[in-house]
Length: 396
Image 1 (cartoon, rainbow, N blue to C red):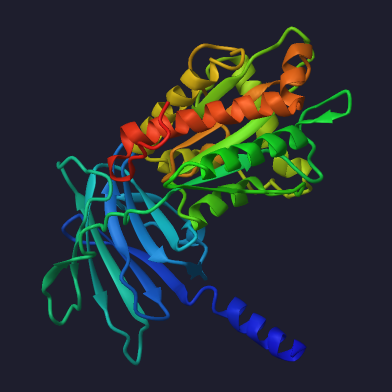
Image 2 (image 1 turned 90 degrees about the horizontal axis):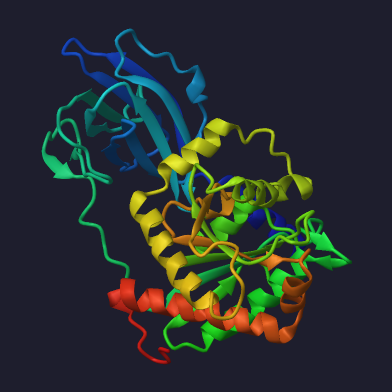
């Protein structure tokens, strides 16, 4: 039985990347266009679209193993592309991004495998005066021999009606205690409050709440977002508390993602939360500022707007039960808020270092009050902004 398990495990791992990109090459055409060719080990139908500000060509593939280092690919003289990168975008999609020097359009066709070459995806990129729109479909020729234009994908399917999936993320955990004061640990407070919030949300018909951790265990920052995406989460709520050297620091704050922090305290809080991986013994030297900028860049504007609406609804309810540090939503570069497809907020419940705040944070009554307020704000947001999943039951 054990041997069978080992064989199956090997089979699963070896097939995790069923699609391989064997080679990538660029060439400059006489008409001024740039041709990008991907050689694959098997047939695939990537999704290709263009974006502006900055100008990019985006190629979405099923989970793919790149056997070539994109930084080693030579750029031809006059190329419209100046940089390429790739990475796992969602648990099911590997995204390749081509940085363009100007506004461009892209057309794709495929060439079947033959005796000399693997299956090829060819993308012709040329200058364009059109205004690109996110996820704009580009024409595809199914096969170069047929040369018939067809769309890459059928129209995007609307997510079927069902429960609103909410992922609750209690910060820190395990080897990473978070903020500390008088032997009181942030990781315990947010876990206790998170469980109460989960229970409150699951009482509401039409909502299903999950947690990134439901016990005292360390979870990498990136894996928290991946767990939300894997569950198909509609909303992401991250819970934190903090300690300050000044006992006068007090009150809760609610954050959404931004490259720029609202103030120095917001910047400090984000830095503290983002250190979680390092405290957990995870190697983060590979996470360069370029990668962080890419993550922010890929976050859709629509998702950020929804995050702000969600934060305002929670802030309105939260202000009735707890003190606020600022009576408006705040902005900072928290890593766990960088899922490009899920409206996300981070709630700093208040300061462990402040005596009055600490009493509320550590008491069952205080945790329950905060949980009910957050749940009420979430329900209000859903009713106002998710008409296909309206929850009129239990509205306050």
